[in-house]
Image 1 (cartoon, rainbow, N blue to C red):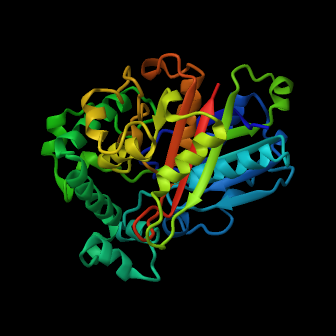
Image 2 (cartoon, rainbow, N blue to C red):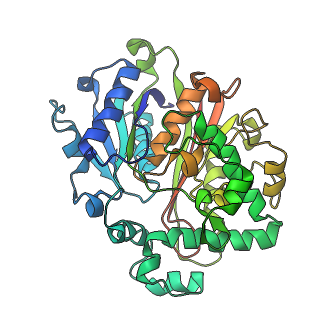
Length: 397
């Protein structure tokens, strides 16, 4: 039995210093409920994701309960989820899996985040906490340098810069390729009313911007942000009962974890292959992809990990325009993390929002023609030499 996405909602991403976690979460939840055409009273269980709230907002342990406390008249169970940048996609995966197993017919998954804060050091604590703090030397050894207090807010940009430099040596990718991705995604983001940045950048703009770490300039890096996203997930038997006119099916949703064990295969490739196998499709069947472009080089590397091209052919894919709107396999049509924004506890469900909107044919100017199958890939944290968590989800009409 496949789960069905019946409704989605999300807030614009950006600076919501005037709103609380509760405010943002409820905005996305009510949008998803309205989209599904149901009342909150029909929800049987909730998976609530947030990652930075314990440090930024001081809210721990009961984040989901706090967000829905004024509308949870039926006192339904709430499972709070924290899984670094893969938090919201983990909430979605777990909710969909429970529907597939027959435990529930109508559930809700949401992710909410607030990362804007006057004290940059506190923001940095969120990101350093997404690495192995029991062994700080592991990160130092990978980076080949000590991480001082000034670096703590950009530790993941340092990680991505290191990986990008390695990839450049192996594939022949250049900073210009990374800038081409920025230009592509900035155009996509300009068409997305929810995107944090909507200005269109040129390749020259991206190349001449301030350097952040290694080959990475500022537009090549995802920003901090606030926001929320949500999805109502139902069983197939509820589609007719609820009158869902454009059901979007969860063909597969696979979650995997990284490890410090040496010589393990690439986590993203392994997880994607499992998702393809469960869905009984391959990368050649995809119509669009939303992936974890925390930096623009990461997008290019994920082209290869997800099977969109052969190893070493990421630069060729961007040069051909294959991943642009109107290309063979559009990627990050939402603008991606570098333009749409990256409030880490909400990012995964924002990807589900985008894919669902596209598969319904409701994406307006950024609509991918005849979109039938979409993939979302969301990674989180850092462990050893790979992500600590990866979720890959395949949706289809």
